[in-house]
Image (cartoon, rainbow, N blue to C red; front, side, top):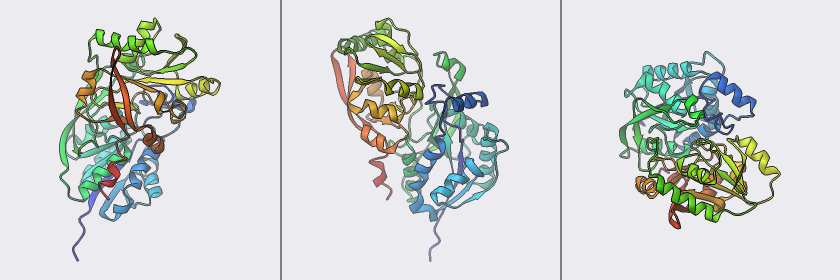
Length: 388
């Protein structure tokens, strides 16, 4: 009987990754930020996202040889998924810290794993890159607030799909991708300072892995003004507008003469700002007593093309269900849309059913009385049939 070739996989989870997103903290780096996020009612999301990926791998678990760290760093969620793994270490702090992630990466390297699957954001990617560099292929499962690096799958299910294709000996590209992170302190002040930290090898297939995010302005001021003019012409009285992050929505706020949170969510009602830089729970509380229509005005991240789930996690599933797909106004320049190279707008709300409901074609305002129709996708709905 032919021996089955197993894929050796090291799994490490940053359990606090992403906790600062819905609470409006724009990051989760540092113990003080985590404490503040918890005090604001932040919920842990990394484990549930890891479980979504691992549940897609149960059908091939006999072909996987997994190693991980104890408890919340991997062991717990693997047990929930019913996938056996060898525990080769544990965190020295509770909750685990960056040094624990680095120790796990080093332990995986010593074990000679074929691939490291990590759950976190850019900070976690930095920690792993500092240890393994381009020695071992890695694949990030996005769970953080900031995901500017090119090492992440577009969704938990997409990460599982890449692994399945590797197991099936498909032609999976292995490319060097940048690890980037931003200064969270400057980020909270509305300034994006992206820094390059190194490269890691990433298995890539089609549209399953996101692109490195580009910071800074990409379009001329005139184009932004044209988009803002179109929006203002269509604003309705007694309708609440949730104005998302980015320079494109900021043009709307500028033309209305309102203060803008470049990297947060502001609320506008009858052309007046009624909420500034609100967290997810704060938006939910406002909506609980608001009876009128609610519209979200959003743009996609540069090159990644992520519409929901990167930088606007304050728009929680509860908020987005209240808004509904038809009341999501997408704005972007034609340059930004063209740079996506045909990839759909990414939707990753951390709620698979909602992701599916929000997928489909969107009208994208690209100028004054100028718009295109463009698809949005959760990145895994159609992908799940490929590796079965």
